[in-house]
Image (cartoon, rainbow, N blue to C red; front, side, top):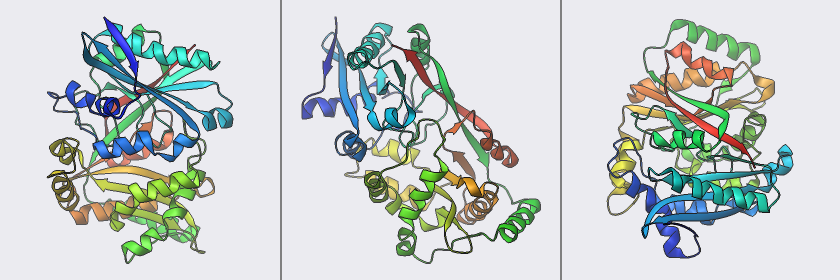
Length: 366
C-alpha cells in the first residue's frame, strides 16, 4: 500500500531531507547536500514570502519510498502571466506507482488552486537547483545540480510530462591561453572602455556584492524561470554564498565610471568534499570542504553574465578567469547548467568544452 503524507513535524522534515542519502547510498555519482543548508532552504528562505510550499513523503510497506514538494510562486505567476505550480525536491524509489502518486498529489493541489499547468523539477526560481538528469548518469554531480537515476525520465515520459527546456553542462580542460584571446581581450577593453575590477581584499569585494546581484537581475531578466531577486533574497545569497567566495574567483567588469557591466562567479569543486562530509559539517565535514577550497584540480563556474547594453564584452571575464585558473593549478573547469536554447553557451566551444550532462524541465497541462 502506498501512503502519501504531508510533512507537518520537525521529525518528518528531517526524514524528507535525509531520504536521498538512503536512496543513493550506493551511487558513486551522487553528491549529498549539506543538511543545514537544505533546512534553511526549506524553512527560512526569503522566497517563501511569495511562494506557497508544501512537502510530502511517500510510504510503501511502512518505509519511506519517495518525497516531493509543491511550490506556487505567486510572484513568478504574476510577472510571467502564468497559472503554474512547480514540483521540486522530487526523489523516488524505482516504482512508477509511487512516482505517480507523488506527482498526482502536487497536480491535485494545483487544480484546487485553479492553476493550469505543472512544471519541474525546479525550486523557487532558477537560482536554485532545477532540471532532471536525462543524460550523463555516470558523471559525478556538481553541488549546484541534482543527481537522479536513469528511471526518473522514463517515469516522466510515461506519466504524460513533456519537455519544456533542457540544460547542458560542459567540461573543458584548462590549457594555455591562445594569443588571439589576449588580443581580443585588449581590443574589447580599449574599445568599450571597460576593465576587470581588481580587489585588494575580501572586504572590498563584499562592498560590491549588492552591485553584483543588481547586475545579475538585469542580465538574467529574459532567462527561463528567472524572476528578479528581491532585496531579501540578495541579502540571503550574500550571507550564505557570496561572503564565502574567494576574491580571486569572482570577476566584475566595470565601465569607466566604475559601474558594473558584467560578472562571473566560480568556486573550486566541492563534490568530493561533500561526499566525504555526507551531509554533515561536523565533526569532519568542514575539514574536507576547507581542504577542497585550498587545493583542487577542478573548478565549477556558477554564474556569468553581462548587462544587456554591454553584450560582447564577455571576453574580459573569460580571460581573467583563465589566467586565475592556470595560476591556481586547476586542470578542469565545469560549467553550471546552460540553457540549450541559449546560443551564448557556444562560447565554451572555443575552449574545447564537451557536453557531459543534460537535464530537463518538464511541463504538463492540468
